[in-house]
Length: 165
Image (cartoon, one colour):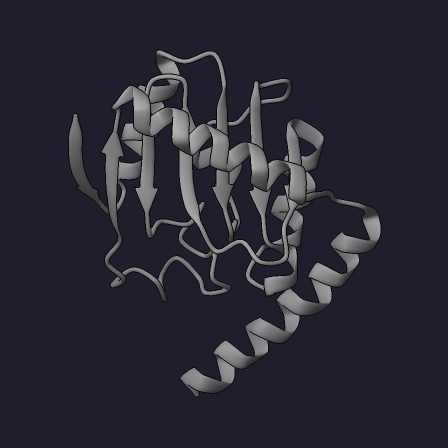
């Protein structure tokens, strides 16, 4: 299967894939408020996430919440949006929430996202290898990373506000 989806279809498709899977690996550069709720991530879920805290586009409060629920690491060069499960993957432009780019859901409401859902076994194996390399290169998130992310998040919010003024 190769299926094109857009917008909030990502959340519905991810939930469908997770119902048939025992684990998932997300390489999603930017996470904003309510990412864990939107993706239905619960404590002890067999989910690994790689984000990019140095981008300034990750909501530090949400990353702190995710740290208390699942395994999460940071990679300074990741920009990917890959949602990998045992039975399929979603690859595209959708970050893990409307405000993953330091804009509010209202500000991002006109943005158009596009993604592809795949279930080809060979392709999934390649994506799994890629994720494994990224996970190995990523580093665990420390409290000092969260504090730096708070500073970068605030600066990015200020820039967004100035551009809109």
